[in-house]
Image (cartoon, rainbow, N blue to C red):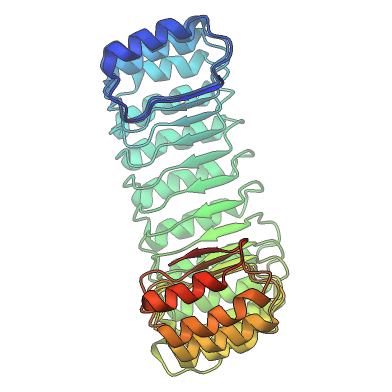
Length: 451
């Protein structure tokens, strides 16, 4: 046995003690999952002793096991002597100060992925962990989301980033970093030569924070993934990000600005930058308050860009206006795009018809997400006609639309002749039992259908 999964089994601390005793000299178990069990300090102490002698365990998951700060210290003692554990999940474990784990990070040289999310570390705990991280030479991925570290904790993390040369990915979601935290991170990133992924979702950095990060990243040559979702970024911040994307020296391949009020002008600035960018492969502008007027600019940018593979435009109410050909052009210009997300955009039959017409000629899209729109029977019939010609689309999401029996029948009619589609989702709509039966009867064995 190489893997043992005991999540949410109620084994408690006594069970953890027995298990730890059995694993002290075990030479085969590589993965142990004990999350969502009340192991408490006693269980953590037993596992810590086990780690001192075990030389096989590679992954240990202890999320939400109530070990607390004292339990963290007990585990830390074991980690100081362990040489094999590479993945450790201690999320939601009430570690607070994190002192015991910090001591372990200074001496441990095996852990590569560390999850400390939702531990209420605060700024003091974050600084404690950061000081240890600055001296650590093995951790490549760390998750510190939802720890209320604020800008003072971010300053500690920034110092660690400036010194650490092995950290590749850091997640700081929902930590109240705000402007000062963003400025601290920006300064550190300007001289960092290792980090490839930075996730700072929901930190209220605003336009000033976005500007600081853009300036800092203009000197960075390693960051490839930047998630800035839900950060109160508006037009000015969007323009700064756009300028960053326009720089030939930037290495960003995945950028997410979802749930920021950048509006039409901000999206247009990003689209213009995308036209001159040769490496961006994924862009998320969901819930950015953009409208169909800017979709034409995005379509033109997609047509000129030869790297973009995924575009997310969900929750923008793009189809609030009368159909004007913008979405059709977007699909038509998507010669390299593999994934297009248009869910929650008020797309009705008039809009879907222009999409379907372009889809019939498209040879790149593999995933099209149209769930939570207003597609009816006529729209479904247009999609069915497109699927007669299209040979690349493998995933089509149509959940929670207005498609009825007639639309279901049209799609059912084309399924036996389309060999490309592998996944079709139509749950939560109005197709009824009869429509669902038609889809099921027509579906090939290689097609997954969700009704």
